[in-house]
Length: 132
Image 1 (tube, one colour):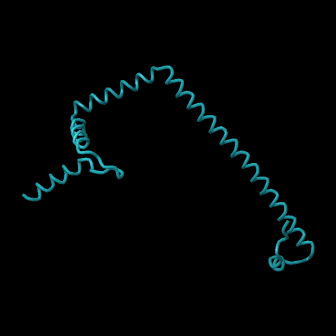
Image 2: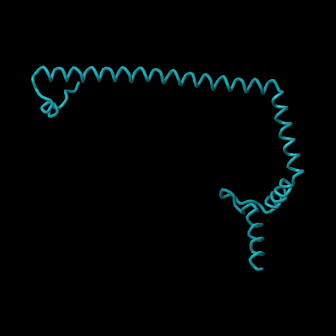
Image 3: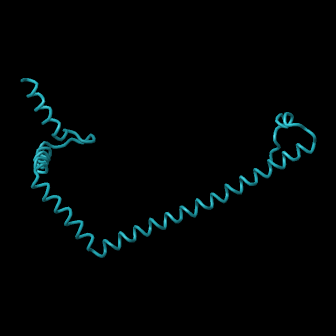
């Protein structure tokens, strides 16, 4: 029987706001008001009323032309930013392809020059590549 009472106390204690939040002390009256609000929100009728209010606010915002304009503008700005990122990536791709092509050409030239001097693959590994 003693365990049941302890569980109720611990459950009730878990639902309360802490005395400090992010290092800031919370006044007792604020914690009491928050606990009352928390109990109200759990009631099905109150949660339905809150849901209806939120939906009404969303509908009102959706009908407001200035809100729609702002949302459209934000979408256009995001689209412009995505386009610029794609253009930058494309330029980087071209630069990497050019560098890889130049590196491949230089490697091929070195292999050809090593083959022309009569040196084998074993001796070519021992010689360091020319920088520059």
